[in-house]
Image (cartoon, rainbow, N blue to C red):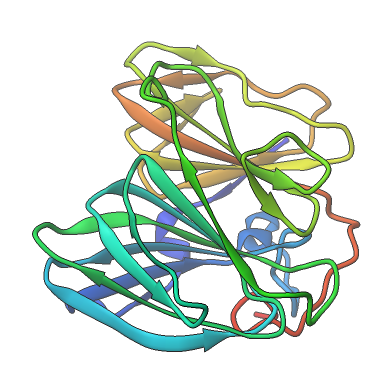
Length: 248
């Protein structure tokens, strides 16, 4: 059975302002009351926009694993360990906040849009750090790309828990099966475009999971970006994170 989380079911913060976030709690896809709406270690997905020439000032995170995934624009990252880097559609970043990590983000020249993905680490107060990944030139070629995964995986960016992130940039008319991994449950997000799953049409900002043994076929009705999260729902995880540790 397919379970759907529509875009309008997630609250938007900063509406009309320069920095706008629609905050998804992926466990809400099951549609049942729960104090903790995480999807295993996958806790929060913020679909964010930031207008050009704005700053998100320096702030601290504790025990959050934070993947920054852009589809447009550029942001300059500065942090408490002295790193300054530009983040773009091709250059991704994963912050492992651990026992404490501060950062700020400044964009100039153009608006940006992307996701900030918050994962709970396997335990609290691990060493802090930051990782970067330059995507291959052909990453928009219509095939699934592994962006991030557990330390034991061959993913280019490493979460310190059992979560994987894949994406695909697909043309109209593509028929797709999402990646799968043993012991992991899927949360599928339509980042851009329109996707049909069975008799259901999903628009930008909608998401779904499924309980069947086989992944349903997705059909793109126009150009689309789809992000697939695989999460071990039974993995041990710390709930002490600044953002990822939250309940409802």
